[in-house]
Image (tube, rainbow, N blue to C red; front, side):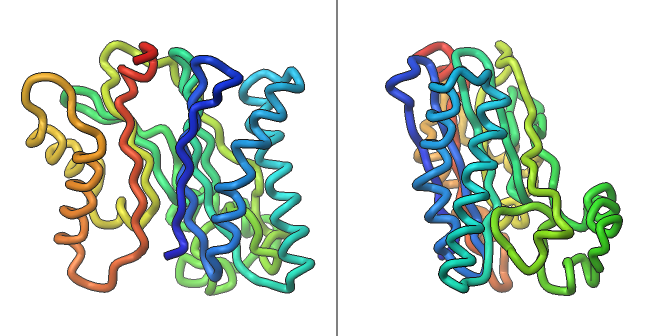
Amino acid sequence: MQDTYKVRTIESWPGLSFFAVYDGHSTHFIAELLAQKLDEFLVESLNAGLEMTSAIKQAFMKAENEVMATLQESKLRGGSTALCAVIYNDMLYVANLGDSRAVIFQENSHVSLSNLHDFTNTSETSHVESRGGVVLNNRLGGELAVSRSFGDIMFKQYMNKDPEITVHQIQEVDQYLLLGTDGYWNGLNSEQTLELMQSLKGEGSLDMKFCGDYLIDKCCEKIRTKKDNMTLICIDIKKLAAGN
């Protein structure tokens, strides 16, 4: 299992919550390091007086520097994607580096808050190729499936290491936020996920723990071939934004 995650309420910043999924490749070590460090770097940057988007960017930069130093010292290979959601009162900040996905679900619709950083995304492919990278079979160097990540020393010169940040003001129609690694979304797309969530919902809101377990079970049922690691965080965003 090379996926991991982090869920944290930042006590020193009332109204601030942090959620993240990390998908490691070639090693589990980088994803685990990020789960330990990235939110701490964010708090450091906020305490230094940076506004939220700048604090997120600086946290990612500090984490990347630590990951690269660790890889160089240990002679390890590999890396990790990262998808983070920072909720501060009624504002949502999604920072993505890799091919995990963040989706907001409303009553009868869904809104994607992240883009795939892989080679199905033509703009990502163009960026990598403009820096001299060779993409074979939708993989950098025929090996790496993502166009942005932490680590991956062998390919870093070709990659964009900056997170893509989406800022969203939480609306009355927004109900649930799902953060999932690619193993989940490769099994169930957003429309299928919405239909399953609607089938669970009676009066009132869904139980998020039960919903997450149910969706993962349904995803596993759908994928008949080899299953990838799957991590899914389900958040009742309306309750969280209201401080409940």
